[in-house]
Image 1: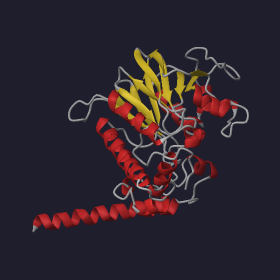
Image 2: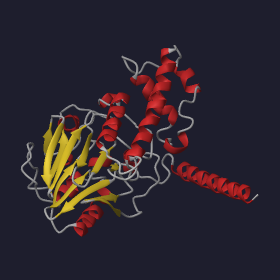
Image 3: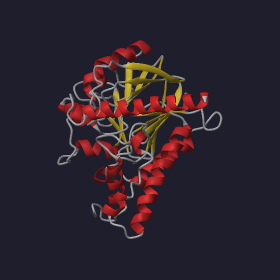
Image 4: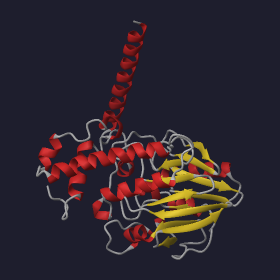
Length: 341
């Protein structure tokens, strides 16, 4: 009887928590107190810009700076200064800079852009201006020395080429680009690999701090939503799966997929190999359901009625990107022509 009472109490508590979370999300979606810029960065999310910045030690020389309003910022620090992964949004730049200065007396030497989305690179100009170059970049510096901004050439081209639909102001551009599969650095006495991993777009990279055994995964892995890949910018469902498989391959667990390598997403909590395996399996299962239904000749409307994401929506669906939207994106991506609804 005691076990039954305890089970009922736990079930009631979980139901209340879930209900509460949906109330919060519903109250904010869309336009519920968010500014236009915040809607652009993360539409449908609660307004956390005033929640303050939180710093969490990850492992070794690496820290996570949780900004709330934009992407996470990963900071590798030491006696040579700081190398950041992503710069979040400009509204939190001063807070990020202040926290980095608490972590190291050295200057900010570099920023790695894992994505060209504004919630990742919006703070590039402010944070870079507060730093010093790691070395002269191949695109030069605008308005004087600043921290080096690294990115893959694919991403750089999408925000810098005239006529590009995603053209952005020069102050946000990277100053050092690469076009190969990886770029290697040695900073703060640690080998670092910046790996090109086209997934949500063709400009995504992941950053592996080999000495600290930490991977900054950018948008390739997240704990807060389904992967929102963009076919128009070179993203694909297969690219997402390839990226997740690469993270699983690099990570080395301490025991039973737990511990060991830490994996930090651009949005969400710190994870390890088991978290990525779980997310990879979820994406694979949903992709396979849509693919098999499509091969069986089902229309998109019929596939939607299958509710292929049903057991995952409670964890990964958001008001701005539902399970149905993820299914639609997979369906389009599996078509040779795309947009074949």
